[in-house]
Image (cartoon, rainbow, N blue to C red; front, side, top):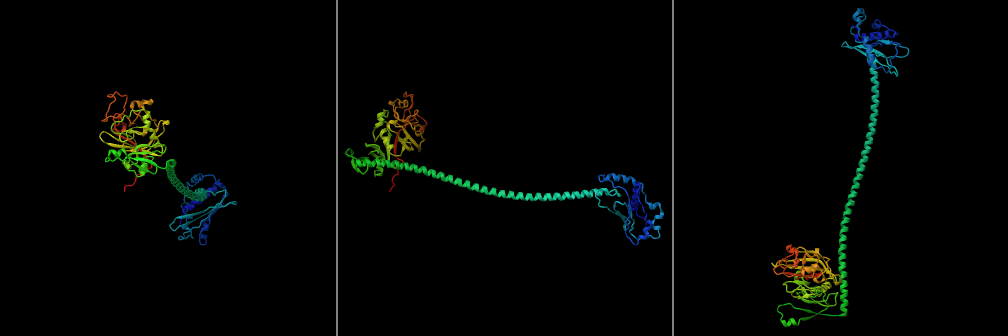
Length: 500
């Protein structure tokens, strides 16, 4: 059997290297191979050489080129020397699969490794190389790959170390990440708790605001009630003092039944009342439920005054201080007439500013104004608060709290205005030919000139401006005069009796 071609190439390469270096020892063991084949399955082939190792930084590609040139003309030695053919050797054994050939390149300083070969059953040759573990030198690249193998083994070792370092770094980062996630979770829980606390506080704050608003409203209501009670106590105190000076009060109750004869009307029934009534509401509370003319004594005045009491409209108890119904009474009068009053209580009249002042300031009073046009349409305006000041303050008007079935033309424009008459030098009073709380000049003028039929014109009457019985919002005009008007007051706290 012919020796493998690869083994021949290896031996020839080793021989070539030795020739180049000039210091080698070659031992041909072909003759001894037959003698030793029965004892050793494998024989190391060693070659010692004094060849210096190439520097570590020489790249494998350089050595590959040099060996390539050396091995270009290598031929199979067994083809040229028939004597070396194993088939002709008397001791050859065709059935032996392993041919332990060994060559060693030796040196007294180092060993560059061992190489062995064997023939496989399929006829192929296996070459095994064992490389030494050197620190600063490498063996000659006998197979043109030793340097690359060593280089990449070292690179692989470094990459393994780097990979290990990276794994440790990743483990540390993962641990830090878990720590940060835990911290974030804790912060989120704390934030949710704070949000819940804030929402709870906001809800509590809203509840407190509502409670404060309710308390403030109750306080305002209690203050108003307290003020009313103080006013009533003051009025009652004055009434008690007056009663002490005059234990009884004689008043005339005028019956308004049309069945009364003229003789009975001339001698009205005299009724003794325990306490003097201060207004029509007092008469109502004392059992008088019929509308008519009665005598009252306002608490702020020591003089009795006759008034007309409306006991029918909206529960009764109204003290009427102005009425227009037929135009029989002239309202173009001066200051004194409007102060003391004029007209007929059963017809048209003005009660008098002084009486109106005493009545409206002895407590909290409301005002009702009833209006009717020439087509018999009736509407009213109601004001929660009404009073006028004394003569020294020109009977200044205070009116507010509007409600009703007709649009307001009185309080929003005439509130806090002084009373004036044509003889006081007020141009509006002169143009309007009446006494009233004029502004510039009016939106309501219930004491104006009475025009029958309602419509009138300043051109036809050669007037300087409108002067009729006007409520502007009724027709959105100053030139429509109403047919009937009345103004009456009663205490704000008045409550009518329940029907039986």
